[in-house]
Structure formats: C-alpha cells, structure tokens
Amino acid sequence: MSTTDIVILAAGRGTRMRSSKAKVLHSLAGRPLIEHVLASALPLCSGHCVVVTGHGAEQLEQALAARPLRFVRQSQQRGTADAVAAALPALHPSGVVLVLYGDVPLIERATLQQLLAAVTTTQMALLTVQLAEPSGYGRIVRATSGAVAAIVEERDASAEQRAINEVNTGVLALRTEQLQQLLPQIGCDNAQGEYYLTDLIELAVANGIAVATVAAADPSEVAGVNDRAQLAALERHYQRRQADALLAAGATLADPARFDLRGTLAVGEDVFIDANVLFEGDNRLGNNVTIGANCHLINATVGDNAIIKSHTIIEQSEVGPGSVVGPFARLRPGTVLAGECKIGNFVETKKAQLGHGSKINHLSYVGDATLGRAVNVGAGTITCNYDGVNKHQTVIGDGAFIGSNSALVAPVTIGAGATVGAGSTIAKDVAAEQLALTRAKQLTVPGWKKPTKTEPQ
Image (tube, rainbow, N blue to C red; front, side, top):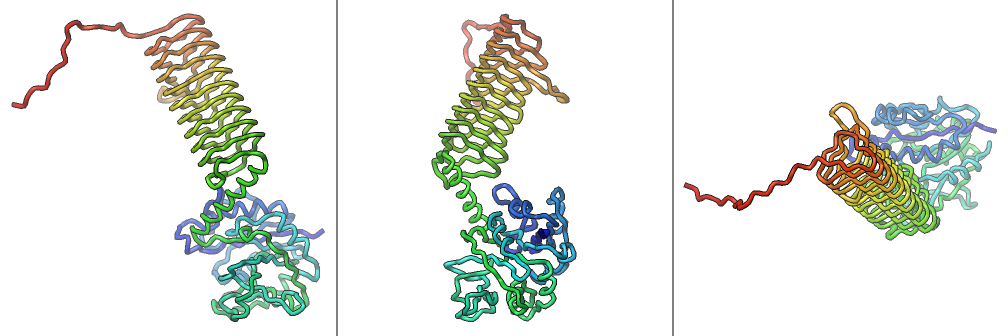
C-alpha cells in the first residue's frame, strides 16, 4: 500500500484580510482555518504532512508547533506550482500526494478519501464543483469524449470557456512520480507570470496520464477565504451545519440561525436551546435540559432535567441533575453542583462544591468552598477566600443556614445545622447546630432630626 503524503499550501499573504496575522490563522468556529483542514486531512496521512509557509511563516510555525508537521518555505510567492515544488523533497518518492489549501477550511474527509481512491499509476484525481456563478474560478475544459483536457484560468479564458460552470477547486491527488515528472514542465507564460498548479492537468493529459474528477457535493466545502466577508459567510454556513446536526440528533433550537458551536456538543433527548447561545470547548447536555437565551457554556456538563436560565456563563463546571442556574449567574472553573441545587441571579462561584439541594439564590460570591446537603446561603454572602497571597477553604456542613450579607473569612468551618446571623463576619469555626453572629447592637437616637441645608454666605 502506498504512503500518503499531504501538502497544505499556506504561504499566501492574504492582503484582503488587512491583518498582520497569517491568513490561515484567522478563526472559524473558534479554531484557525488551517486547523479545520488538518482535522480532515491528518487521519488520511500515512507519511508526511508538509505545510508550505511564506508570509508570516514564523507565526504559523509557532502556532502549529505541537502538530506532527513538516514546514518548508516558499521564499518568493511565484504561484501554487512553485509552492508544491518547494514541498517535493519532503515527499516519499513512490507514494501518493494530496494537495490542499490552508484557507479552504470546510473540506470533508469523505471527499478526500474519494479523491485518493481514484489515484492509480496511470491516473491522477481532481476535485471539481458546479457553480451557478463561476466568476473568478478556473474552468474545467473537457474533450468531446468527456475526458478532462485542461483547466483555464478566467483571466486567460475565452468567452466560450467562461460559460462553463464546472470549475477547479485546486484540490488534487496524484502519485509522487507523476508530480516529479510534470512539475518541471510547468511554465509561467500567463497573465500573472506565475507557475500555476492548474497547468498540471493539461500536461498530465499530454503525458498520457488520465485525469479523474470527483465532484464536491456542497460548494461551501471548497470555498476559500480571501477576505473577512467570506470568512463571516463560511462561519454562518458552518454554524448552520452544526445546528442541523443537533436538530437531527433530537435537540430543539429556538433559532438555528442564532446558534454558535466552537467545539463539540453532545446532547441527550428533548434538549431545548434558546437563541444566541454559545458553546465552546467540549460540552455535554443530558436529557430534558433547557438552556436559556444568551448563555455561554465552556467545557461544561449539564445533567438531566437541569435548567440554565438566560445570560448565564458556565465554564469548566458540572451542573447536576434537576439543578437550576441563573439568570445572570457565573459558574467559574471547578464548580460542581450536585442534584437539585439552585444558583440564582448575580451569583458567582469558583472551585465550589455544592451538595444535593443546596441553594445560593442571589447576589453572592462563593469560592474555594465545600457545601454539604441542603445548605441555604443568603443574599450578599461572600467567602473571603484570598488573603492577598494564598487561597483558603470554607467548609459548610449539611443543613447550615447562612444569613444575608455575611462574610465568611477562610479558613473557616460552619458545622452541620448551624446558623449564621445576617450581617455577620465569621472568622472562627462555628459548631454544629449553633447560632453565630457578630452583628453590632442597634442604636436608636430619640428625637433625632435630619440636618438642613444652609444657604451659602
């Protein structure tokens, strides 16, 4: 079985992006464009994956340093054939090479597999697509027999050729020996004075190498990004595709056009997701989960029958079954809610574990804390967990009641069933079933009158 090498062209400047960032590092659904290409291509690579860099080479190489890639640089931007020639020494001489583009992010693995399957010792494979409006693309010119004869760039095409709707995507696969044979024959006698990889097709035919074509089913799969408008259009297409997959899995989206997934999302049965919800990283929703409008979930797990109300942020946290969170709540990393918990409006938690049925209903901060079962934390309560240098733990036992506007100065333990009176600052442990309060004695001044404003002298 032949070794499969992959060449990804990523040397372009991307002038129309008007950015100091390499074009292929611009983000689609939370990942660089080229990362989408790699996700489809790397599982098919049994040899070397070679990225051809140019503009922003150091930036790109640093961003992809953790990937199993080889980098070669195209010192001058002299066309796609010149870029592939730069990669040629890194390829297995008797293998198959797949040529891709770092700014064509939605290419599907299944399509690439079809392309590779069409390559033989006497045949290369080219990915084409039918476009209702083919302006700007190289046209596929076929002989009377139907066989591919050549690709003609629009600027070099006749009026008759410009009427052709089948266009070149630039994606192709062939044996490395074929590439070695044909690349030196490519010239630069064209309007741009560049070495076009598309000339490979006509040369292949002239050298007795057949050209098989694979048709992309969806034009967006082979759409490139040259400016920010195209990037935005592909983002919406990608998100709609993600939304459609969730609908097919049984989730209900209030508005599929206002849904964003930048990572993965696993859903159970009868999940409801309201408008303008953003998921990042790896998220999992159980059965009968409701996510309110304008929520943001990052690496979150939400259990069965839980309700996340609007404008809530949950990051690297677990929400147990039957819990209710929000609106306007923030669960920071390390928060774990057991079943039937309640986190209300304007509550923030961090590294907090809440036992079954515990409640923090409003306007509180609980961090670096462990709460037992059925704990009730009143409004305005804070755990004072940071002394300016170190973080300290607060432990609250089962059934404890923390009155409103209390400050728990960690490290501190509140025993099971204990009560902290409203307005208290607790800096010492409280035994189980005891009442603790530090409230100042109320003073009433008889006959007191408000001061009056004096006239200026």
